[in-house]
Length: 223
Length: 405
Image 1 (cartoon, one colour):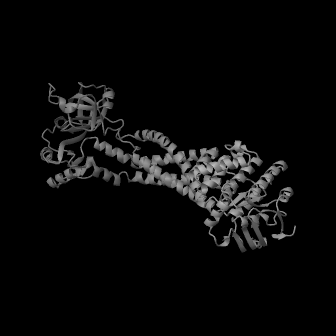
Image 2 (image 1 turned 90 degrees about the horizontal axis):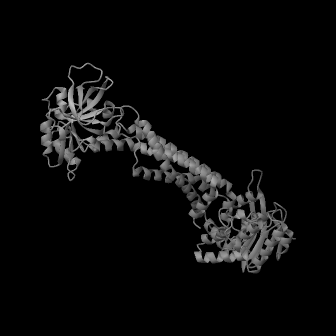
Image 3 (image 1 turned 120 degrees about the vertical axis):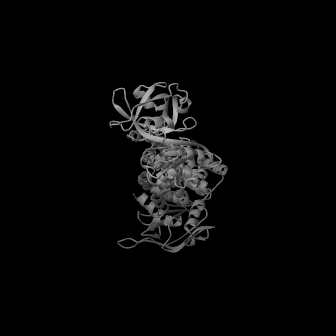
């Protein structure tokens, strides 16, 4: 089953000095359970492409459908709903809510999806076990290491059982050893059936993906 | 997790910001609360004072200030006619005059003298020691008129119930041909209309007329009427006005309304201006702190939106944050404003010539309700800009900016 189906995506940012074409005619198809890594130099449009795939930005032209929904025709509320239920996001800087514990951060998207409290509790416990942080459930982000925060962020991204996990430089703030642990966790998430698209400068992490794409100047080029 | 829960956790997390905001709101809201108390304090206090006399209708010869009014002629017959009305429970003829007496230091001191036909059943005073005037008026073996004196006078002149007190009609320091007249002090009382540092005494109508050497006078400065509870003051006013259309008849409520329109309008206007200003300060304080807070959390908010948290949830979180800051500050403002009001009231009541029982700041539940309503509106208005900032945040651009910085 195809989750992402993008054709000739373009994203142009109007600037005072002239428009910048961050993504140029990118076509991409991601099937269920796929693992895609996108690499390329800084400013080549990787993160912009990821934001288009994650429905947080809209393309200037081209077509993009997510699980059969034409994203260009959906309202902001509908796109928000898709992000909540079908897409998981992992950011370079984790972006956990600092006032919530690890447990509560993982529970948050489930509560937003109106999942019943017992179901939420069971899923949160399951995810904390899954990322190896069952003993850190009641810790605030400030009491966790970088690797632990990123694992909590991955658990939060998986909370509503998304079809697609998007990760933007997920190891960018981590040392090699911790980055390796996070990479191993991504492998496991993918093995368990979740499609992953990540953008990274981390070669070993990209090498774990089944599909490796390279971007330059907004275009996908042969590796 | 609800918007309220997120807001509660945020407020608890950022303690310094919360403390600053709550302290600021508490101080400003305390001033606002005091303005609310002040806006109606004098009016309520005045109403309490005139109600405490036990009469709810006043009959005068003309409108205007008491000193300039035309006396009510034929007061005894009028009082008798009114007393027999089915709407009326009691009537008192009241005279007032300036008198003076020699203090223990030999200097003459001015005294406000009241003469009333009814001292036992009702009165604008509360007996502290002794008894009220008509219980002793006929029993004095020497036929000396009875007198109830204010606590201040008793203390300064060293007078006790049973003492003889000498009064003379007129203004202290001015020549008078009228002789001093002796009165038997029968009681010491707190008078409703006693002024700060002033002296007040009350006697019977006979005692009053004796002082004026006008024993045949049948005038009254005011006739006070108590309506029957089942009839009410409005019915009594209407009945008296039908009986004597030439007189001015007011219920206490009408008197208070007149004062509200004329005498207290300035206080209301000043209070309104100051209340609006303080509310505006609260809005600016909370809006600034929330806006700074939102700007510090742009990445966090963009990430929340990216993971599918709705705009409504983000807006609710900020609204609740504002409500919590304003609510906590507003709750602290109540005792703070109350204490401040007590202090300010004490200062203002020290002004000479004001009745001792008149207060500028009077607590009433309505003020708390209004205080809460103003704060609720303040909280909502203060949150408008930060909420708008957060919900219209461009998610992708913000994430790019945050990650690029």
